[in-house]
Length: 136
Image (cartoon, rainbow, N blue to C red):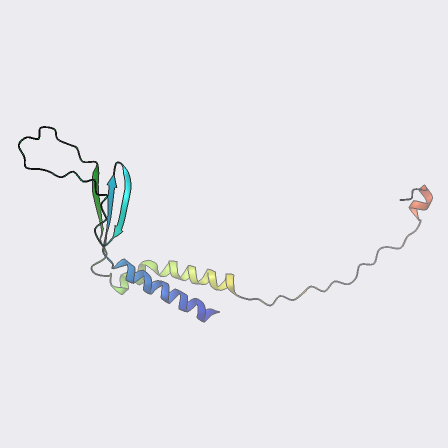
């Protein structure tokens, strides 16, 4: 069980380091106030209702675009902190985490309590017969 927890914690730490160094872009296409398309790492698909600008001089009415594109860049870490800094800042957390899960998940052999059979006290008088109360 301890080996299994050790493998899980090592894999989780490796994935944390891997994903903290990724950089990616989230692109959204919004048309009429509602999200139409969503993409990670590539351009979002358009709805086909973009306003095309024409170079003609006869156009006097300007149309306001109903569509907008939003790009969000999520920057990863370029350099990981040194191991000394990492160990000093998280040592207490990792120690408490591992300690709590070792004792929560440990299998303890509990002995079953052995009780002697209960012997009721001897009857001095039979109360039901004396009071003449019987359950039917």
